[in-house]
Length: 431
Image 1 (cartoon, rainbow, N blue to C red):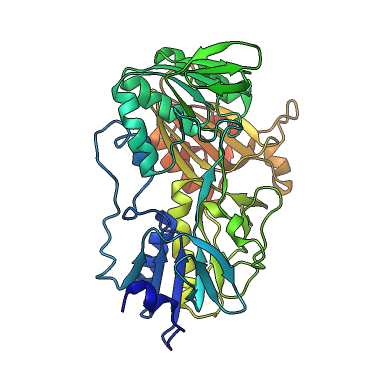
Image 2 (image 1 turned 180 degrees about the vertical axis):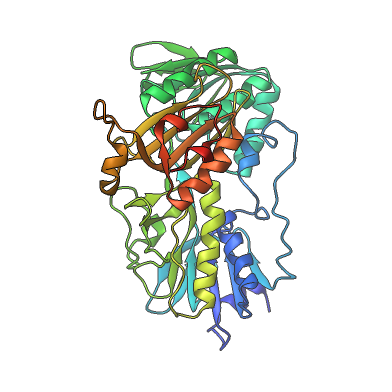
């Protein structure tokens, strides 16, 4: 009997976890379940035909032809994980405890939603020849010959993925123009006073950055901006963000955010439907640490969250672990290693650490708290002297990042003056 035929039969008495999505969040959940002692069935469903792979190398080694792929080093058969490739899921039926696929339903005792996020397309560019995304292994394979031919490329979006692709394209010898609708790169992630210092990185690398530039239309060989400027483009790469891939959950009863489309998981990464969990890029969760709901589209979140899900499932419904990490992200762009840890808001106090015009510097975000008024009060003029470290951006200063991440995890309060002194170890600024 075929594998698909077995899956569509009525379930046997063996409890089964069905994981929807074979990216890092899905794969790590399956592996972590075995590590936590789950001995029953695990079914992992991937919508691509490729063996599960890691995504960060796609914008680096794979894109530049330095590696053929980034397949996870996991022996699914040896772990007893039933892996189904090229099997997209079309729906969830909680009343029957089934996941629906084109090849038939699969019954579950627990389901884990790990479908990740889908890139946002530039309106009017769908299906046009020469227009690319960079999200999958097939996307990278299509872009490799473009870079190898040293084409003239227009990148739409100066976020993390746009900067990383522009870096690779310049390394390959392509002419690169990056257009960004906002007035600065990384506008969705960093405040103007920080992102402004990253603008010059593009010119230093030989790429042209156009901010405040909105795309009016894309045609074969050209991108036209709203101000009438036409940019020649042998290829166009779109990197304007992604949304949680949750459309397939319509009608399932799984509560989804009307604002960002994320599955609204609770602190233990459980959804609104019993027995169904959500993890990775498709899910948001409440953070007691930051007092808000977080949606994190970063690799580290897809690595850490599965451990919580796996342990909570393995416990079989007893009081489970709460997921409240310090978010972490890293990026290599234009010869610089950029790392970010934590989560900040506009009201947090920004502290510079080092010269942002130089090669290595950091930015700290300190949060004032009611109980720290006396420590924060500058006796001479009412300024802030201290605050709890909630986030850190480090450019070429990995030690700051390593120390800062631990300080954030512990909720440590820093002396502002000492924290701003780049020659003092960050941990030495703790009060």
